[in-house]
Amino acid sequence: TGQSRPNPVRQVLQSGTPMTLGSDTLLLTRDGRRIPIDDSVAPIRVADEHTAGAVMVFRDVTARSQFEAEREAQDRIARELAAIVETSDDAIVSKDLESTIRSWNHGAERIFGYTADEMIGRSIRTIIPEERWSEEDEVLRQLRQGNRVDHFETIGRRKDGTEVHVSLTISPIRSAAGIVVGASKIARDITDRRQGEAVRAQSLEREQAARAEIERASR
Image (cartoon, rainbow, N blue to C red):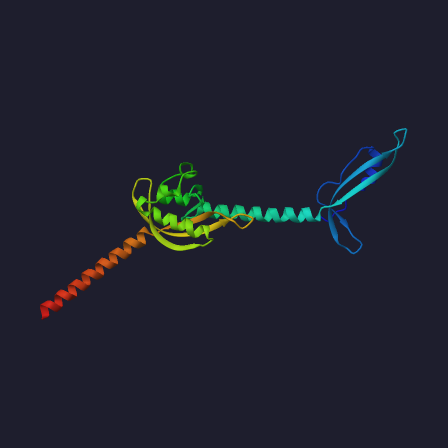
């Protein structure tokens, strides 16, 4: 705060009891630098229990303060990312290399119909049609090699058994040692887009058929 602390020695001499200056205390160096410290002040007693002085201990906590500031920043970023994940319309899921689901957001619940309680701990193959399990095997192979899978279009299966067209982006999750330990999977529902493409393709086919019929009639 920039405010001076009360003289700790005077307070200990008056009270005769140990004390501390409290957190967020700084020492000023000769060249004007500010050093965060922990401290303690204790009375020095003589034989008749008279307080004859005080001993002060200062501990430089610069490194610890920096670590705590970095950890707080990381925690804030983690909370912000968690909020983004939870509010995303896309399904965002994490799994280990055995395909066991570790996290399941609201987007995944909306697209596939399962709640997080129903899916965490189960295999991701629950939402993959059995005839497409070979795709999951290939994804796992790519992940173990540290590769990312971008915009892979496939079909998933909802809780009610209906199918949903999805575009997948799958990225490896690494441990602190850099070892791939799992994957994050983002699934975007592209059912409407695929249906629109099918309608346009049918319209084009009908148009081409009509033109061919007109040409035949003209001949």
